[in-house]
Image (tube, rainbow, N blue to C red; front, side, top):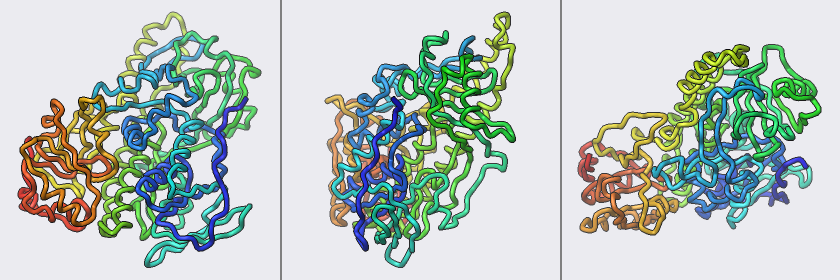
Length: 563
């Protein structure tokens, strides 16, 4: 049986219907946008031109920050009920070839033990969640939102951005042509994004030589694990006779294979089958190619993630090499940043200018992720085929290759600093407390509640996390019983801005946050902290919601945090 997912829902679309937001694209980022906006009770129409069946799997690696977002939506534990075995190790193995020697291994806990990956720094952890199960989990969660309409087999043909919103022209083979209207359109339509092309925004490239062609294939390899001497892993990186990557899709016989193509090489399906068999030292009859396709990597970031009432998210805004698994995870971070801002503007408690900070905050982060992925890709390219590695007498050569692999590749899988070290310190929405920016380490994450950074996880007495107190609103954390934060909470409520107030008495919470009061944004980023309530609460609320910026004198009046 070939593993695929079920099709997504379709149906008619009411002509001239009006929505708060139309989302174009039903991949993980589009579905995540629908969940985020639907959870805010905004009316949403998501259209996807395909049927939603996952026939060719990609993007299996879900990082810790994304899992924290899924946790807020109540679906992080769904990974344990997916078809990928929860107890399968997520190790990464580098081998000279599948039938000879292992050169290096990066051990990683299974999905069931995902929290062990973060060593108490998060209530979550990274997982391996193939699209056969990940996309349907997102789709089911989006469909559960009563204000969200999902329509597959609908194409966005064009759109007109006007003074007060967007007119979106849609078509379906089954239902014909329709025009709907929305205040905003969010383009989640992938790397080739027709919406982005229609807008014509410029892009920023790292260099002219970042593109390369790769062959991908979805294959069945019965009995592979029994034939090879290597311990189980979710990915095998092969060096000989040509570089190839195998990624496990079901913990058993289904795999995704990728390998670089030489200039002029453009193999047909039969050639792909023969290549895979040759590299795996098996007969062609032992390889079943279920699907194959050529793809190319890139390193591109759009100059702006916004044009009028149209916003870009995911691959439509930034394209990066899959090395390190940062692409989709960066897109999910876009969703967390954009969702609350759209709500604020649509509900009227924030100005339209708040949406300009989406580019200001996310583009620098996307550029960092593109550079990180490009660094990983170049490190991968540096490992070239070497017949000596298969020679039983060349143990020293294998040891040296293994040391080189560990030295150059470990940051790809030891990247908690990249995953949780998000920083918007220079954002106009952040009120600086005067403390110094900590160094950025891609491997190590050091928690800090400095404004502009992710609010730290603190374990609470009931076994939950401080992050479980964040429900997509602004949150005022009170970490010292004697401090009165009432004037600040009243300033939010007077303006009709959703705010949750929480009191945390857990051991170490005050030390972790470095202040008696901390204001956390709806996306989990610390906006302000202080030991006293701000003298000018209106100025603070204006800044964090995009109505104004404050100078250093006003910032000092808002209270100084402990260093």
